[in-house]
Amino acid sequence: MKRIALLGPGTFTEESAHHFLGTAQFQYLNCKMIDDVFMSTVNGEADYGVIPIENTFDGSVRLHLDWLANEMELPIQAEWVYPISISLHGIRESEGSLAVDCASLTKVVSHSVTLTQCRQFLHDYLPHVELEQVGSNGEAARLVKQLGRPDVAALSPLSAGAMYGLHTWAQGVQDHENNFTRFVLVGREPMQLPNREVSADKTTILVTLPEDYPGALHQLLSAFAWRRINLSKIESRPTKKKLGTYYFFIDIQASMDSILLPAALQEIEAIGCQVRVLGSYPAYEYQPAWSQP
Image (spheres, rainbow, N blue to C red):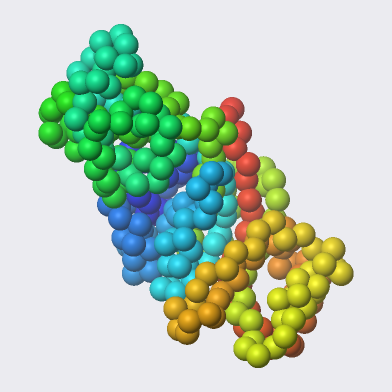
């Protein structure tokens, strides 16, 4: 049975993995921090790791991109998108009024990203509380349960509240309804998700431009443009080697098995670009009706 490391338990990462991969065919290894997910996959404790890399409203998770670029080589083997619905949980039953429930709180615990996705809710209902950041949303729910204080609540997935026996005071408190996170499965061996229909084939590359080459970025993009290869994302990140030098993360809607994409990469390498393929993989869209295999 393949082992999959992820941030958990009680996290959106865990929810998404269970939805897309199922619970019967894999053994899940829960990790407190995202670097533990990477290291568990690298050192062989797990065969794969699940990494959130982008959100609809927060954009890229830059720390996780930097890990993929700088710390280790773990190819992307699959991608899926999962909806994020955030709930407010406490140890006591609701008073029946969200305003009354929130007025009794002095502290809210959650992951930093979750707190940013609930800015308006926090402003409207909880401007008076202390905000405490923890390593995961599941850890937030666990901590509230452990503390046992009626004046402390967690912002976390609905499943995390149920896992730790908390009462749900409100659901869907994120600022935007259309809130989705993109997850990738990293590991050394290819894996096709069981009983899932591929929505697209994608390739992600990391490109470093040659120094002192005027128009290099334009020429790089031209190599894809004239072949009519669609780029769904391009983002720069510092190389951390020299001020003013950058990597470019590029998501391409094509497979390395296609004819045109390898030729495009050869063309940009010919002008002095360094190209590293981070993965060529199937991508899956969210389907609520999917059953777990």
